[in-house]
Length: 369
Image (cartoon, rainbow, N blue to C red; front, side, top):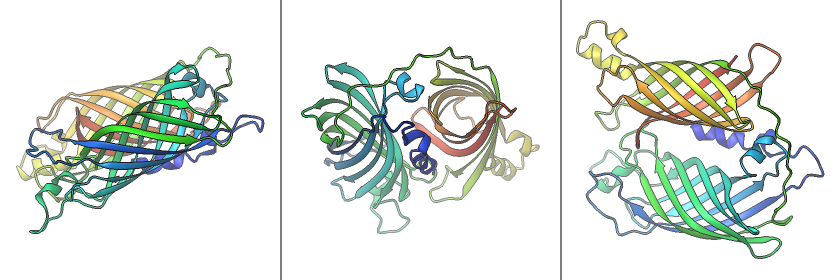
């Protein structure tokens, strides 16, 4: 669900539109072939499928040219919308289709060519999943839902071969899972290489606008936010979903025109823990069900869109889990005002994890003053 909002954001005119009719409007169509190998990534998986997934990726992308300061600060990235098809060549995994936005950064320029890093995340539809039936294949334990999160990384090399055509190759990583919304949730990981080509109707862009960077005079801001999430009872498969409520208060500071630092204090109510304590007839179950934490985050800003990454610490945990946790998500700033008390309003989609193990994904709304 968090990525549906991200897909809509990438159609927002502030991100895609050019403010000047004379500006270079460089779009491209890309097709990429991605053969890969399945990765067994958990110690309790005791088989190695002799399967080599085959994927094809179609991408419509746009080259930013520096009209907005954040574009210059991030080295003129390319923004894309992608459609990918994967055949896992393993009956118990089946096939998958993914639709996702992406952003591609230039890491190292070599004449007219360059090394790039591409990051994408969106929705993945799997046609084979775990089912509660006697005929269900036990190998289908990897995916518990049809609708999933899809995440991909690519590191590659792009080279122009003519004015309108470029070729690219490199290595990639794909991940499909449901962010612990439903069990089972081992997820499917694959890694391989890719090769593809792009057609640029207006020519491959090599020259960009450069602006004088003004001094960043942003001040400390106070932020408040409310979140809700749903997570399945971890002790059973196909069990009930329990809501998780969270309240946050934070101090933030924007810096270098492209990032924002957050320090937040959080109160979290997990109703699964409340039900568990009540079932044990614990005294003061309501008070014992709250968790309190602090979290330090850095948010990478791309216009109205931000991607926070943070490390948090639980001061208490009734279930005895790890105290450290990570947050990875997306903020969309749908309202910004400089002359009133309320400066920014935003929606937020965030994944909570303990290292590589997803805990839950939450949806929130927040305000900066």
